[in-house]
Image (tube, rainbow, N blue to C red):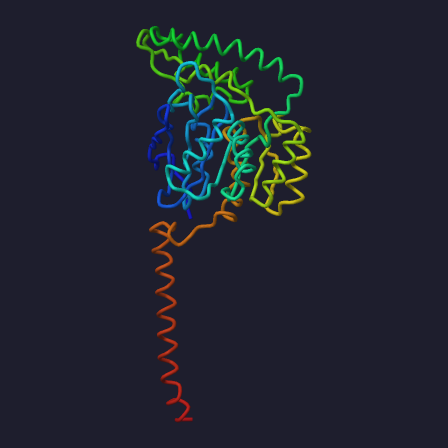
Amino acid sequence: MGTLSLTDYEDVRICAPWGDITGRWYGNRNERPILALHGWLDNLGSFNTLIPLLPDYLGVLCIDLPGHGRSSRLQAGMRYAVYDYVLIIARVMKEYKWTRVSLMGHSMGGVISFIYASLCPHMVDMVISLDILIPPILGAKLIDMMSYSTEKQLVEDERSAEWQLHEPPSYSLPQLRELITRGSRNSVPAEFAPHLLYRSVAKSQLYPDKFYFSRDGRVKFYNLFVIDSGLAAEMARRIKKIPYLVIKGSESTYIDKSSNEVLSILGSQNPHFEYHEVPGNHHVHLTNATECAQYIVPFIRHHRPPTLGSWSMAEEEAASGKRDQRRKAQERFFIWRRQKPRVLNKL
């Protein structure tokens, strides 16, 4: 079997009450795919280097979460929240009439996957979580963060209204690459930034060769999923035996000691739980996709193995050739059996 191609995709658009959820469905579109959810301030482009390493018998549907990439923004005055992003999984499932879902999420996308798997474990058949496991347990820090984000939310509301009339600040491509690198705390090196910029910027109408960020500025100050260690542990217990793969970037701190209890619960109750560490930072799936794929591909093949209907034409021809060989061998055997008594009679 081969691997997926970045050129073999279908752009999708899923209607929602506030607008559209956009995405790209890579590979096989005849079977239920893996649903891929990107991280905070990213878009589906963050999976660009990983997609070509995944097996082609199973498609991958990558979406832009609301306010990110090319998906619609929420209406003026509304605020983004992790709770609402969890509902996006259910909306996609409803659109395609899926009764179950396979999830792959990075960062915030991994948090969303964890929450949904704990809320609806009977509807999830596989989770791949990239450099995240649970929402951050912030404790008293949460108060300061909520205070800060509440004030900034009002500022972004005003900016959004202003930029309906005036174009936002624009930058050259080198400047944009540097902004992505600094904004990710060097998790996305400049050479990888174009994977995210393609769906995050629009061309300036005022300045040639410049671009501005087209994502919704309000997503920078979204409502977190408030969680403590007790709630995280109980959510992990609900996941039970769902096949669950966690990959941690060796230089990242997004999976720290606050995740230890959940890791212990999943590891003890779930025979299908895997945890691996690979060299890299928070965007390890983008910058070190090859190492990540060494664990992801066998995991997918084991828990979502190919079905007869997912074979490619080349594979079908190869299988047909083998069937012909077996048929001819059987025909020779039966001819030999019919001739055998005559030979014995002559002895």
